[in-house]
Length: 173
Image 1: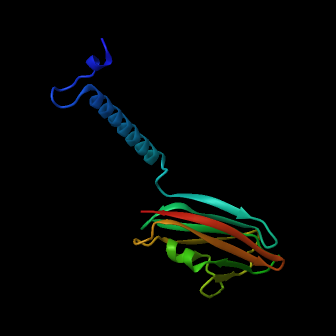
Image 2: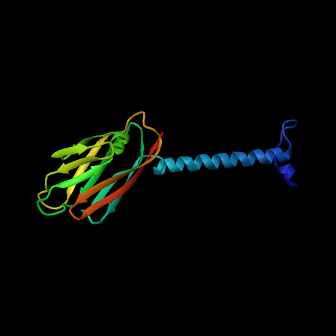
Image 3: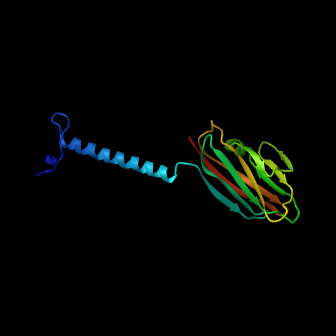
């Protein structure tokens, strides 16, 4: 019995070779569908956060930010900055594009002073009572968010220099 006899073929519709190709394409399609469903169940297509940190001439800086987000979802960036010196105020510089693209509107704690230009927003916080200062920036991504990756930098200037953390967030449609 050869291979052409084991494949059922409707008379006048397709030959054994065409039926074999069709079956292979169906198997490939079902396999890809299963892989996409599994990736979605695991959470690869949904929002997730990541952490980046840096130590440099300025205060140590740690940033927890969205790695993948979608338009209209809640977004939060949590920044932990070491005080540059005991009793000294803490300065954090963020890019306005980050605030706009992620829809960050609420800061906790509130800064004692806020200045800025078109390149950076400079937030000055009172000296933390002890240990590092943790600042939470939260909001909701715009519903008309432009899909794709965007990068931004958070900076912590100090008396000895500036520490920078580069971050990237992917906005999915």
